[in-house]
Length: 225
Image (cartoon, rainbow, N blue to C red):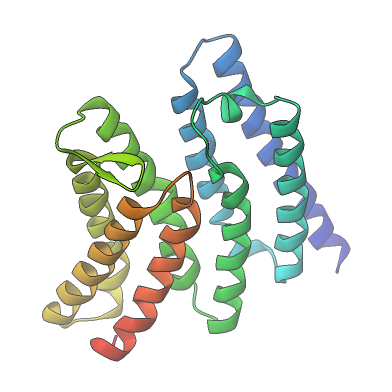
């Protein structure tokens, strides 16, 4: 691992810690609701990691960052720290799973050597998931329960719409056949929306990106994408 790579890792570590610090300030001093500060960290983390394929040259760098922050998050949970992330009453493993899935998605990207396998899963997780959560809480219409967790049709609908827009933005430059574009976009968005709806206790942070990846692979066979 080069010295330059180590410097980049240190910059990323500092960026993530700064993001945690901003969330803590918002929670403790600006009295921002924990569900909002969690989303700030959720979105911010996703956006920061989008530069990974452009800057980091090996998945080992991402693995070291992942292990470091999983340790920080586990300790913070154990000792009731980072209230802006952990100060929720419901049981959730989402904060721990988030850095893990970032590494897994990056590793998959290195296997296929295609940034689509990194950018699309991470963006859908970072943007569509918070949109679903916030709209579902703001307008809790069409409540339904899967297992023990209550979701809303409003949240699921907005997840599907935002996922559709993001997926189409990535697919259009790759294909000029509009029937193929529509089929691939609808397929990925629909399957991923089902995965989000069925996920419990923060496991959507794992299942959403994995479902996007699986849907991309299936699209290659079903639609010759």
